[in-house]
Length: 320
Image (cartoon, rainbow, N blue to C red; front, side):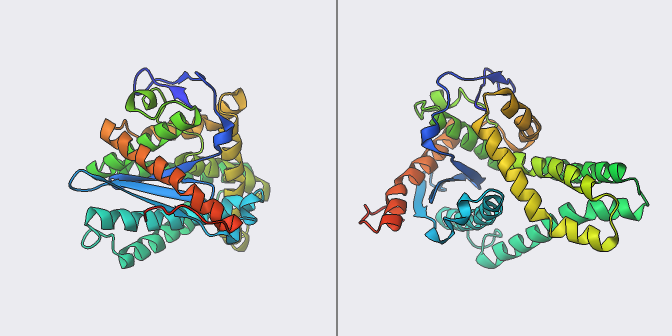
């Protein structure tokens, strides 16, 4: 995946040093004027305050789900739940640090409402609505049913992201998204975390959540084709209850693509997601890259705490 970028839209294959797999998978997400990252049981975030300074936090995850995080398919569902929870926590923290927790939709009640609406959107609009539309118009051929449903689902996803990206504020979030990916690339390749070193790499990453959503669309097309033309009861059950299973399969595909990103199979798997990330990532400024690096360093700083939680050993204190 980590591609050299001569220009913002170039896609030259990069393998200057190759990926150092010992660093382990690391992921994250963009925040409003900030970045959150996670590696293993540790996570950290950084945000640019309104006075121009950078605030950081270093934290760890509870160990109770460690066993589930190692089970194929199940770990994908666990990762989704943890990502949503961490994203909410990081968003609240960042809003507080920026001094805009109230009045801008970042109160706790506001975020609860946002999460509720998101769940309705995922399971209702994204999961169920395409199948209901195809069923309602009378498509009965199993292959055509699955293909049409998948194309509608894809149109909803791409259309929503494209419309969202028209907002100036969201454009900045997408630029922080690009900074997050490029910084992770540099870290995985053991390149110095400077703007010059980081700018060698693509703003696209195979383990991106955007790529994950697109893989979910593709997996559902194949999975639902096996079900055929369902009754209304089976349609609702398969599109809602089956969504976590599809998500688990998609997670494994994304994980595999990340591990083989410099090989043909990895490049093929990541190609659709890479295209979609052209919408959800923008080229960051140097100060955005600085925030992404701070988030990565905060994540790494939390690892002594994560290790201590497992071993029971004393840990070096990290600023909250």
